[in-house]
Length: 303
Image (cartoon, rainbow, N blue to C red; front, side, top):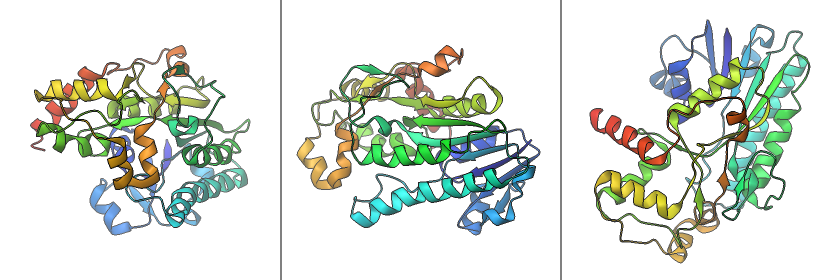
């Protein structure tokens, strides 16, 4: 099997590469030197899609995109966030549509931000009552571009990913310092839902999308037991054996993050209905077990 990956040096991309059994793994990157340091030696690195023969590919996994919350959302930064997703996806789709024998599977990233801010009601892939804000705007066009690759030769899977929990990066790594010092706690009123997924289950979802033809279209890549921000904070504190007595006021977060604070102050109670209907088995369906495994792994790795 020959696989092309965009975003291969990111948190999910690096973990995926470790679990792939393929004849060729090609990674599209903007920085050859940096990618060579992060990825195994057997990975083929390219800086342009012109160097890839799409007639020889079996699968394309599209994970590329500027980090959403690393910088404040100026107009320029919003454009970078959008174009970093839309442009590469459009280029991939164009290459697949022009191929004589296109890849049989195209897996493209998205996020549960597609739904926008929601209340506590559980929602699945069929939910239509979206809140039209920036996160929805990003994901809607991103998904529409990717779905245009769907044909009788190419199956398209769109992964609406939740908060990916890992021991070597992502949201959990940013939370840990405060919680380890007993300074962590709920954000705002803590009622907003956090739809999360363990990194191992995230990789298993991508592998299932590659190998199971029954999986197609929109797929919520989240654990089946989302929790409120308050429950998440209490659970993380419990696993760390630390108190959970502090609370981060909403106004303080808005001062620090600006408009992007909305991603943290509001949430979605998302269920992976399509995965469950396709008999996908989550290794870490419950938060406490997931956090214990990740923190133990981090301790064993000395991080």
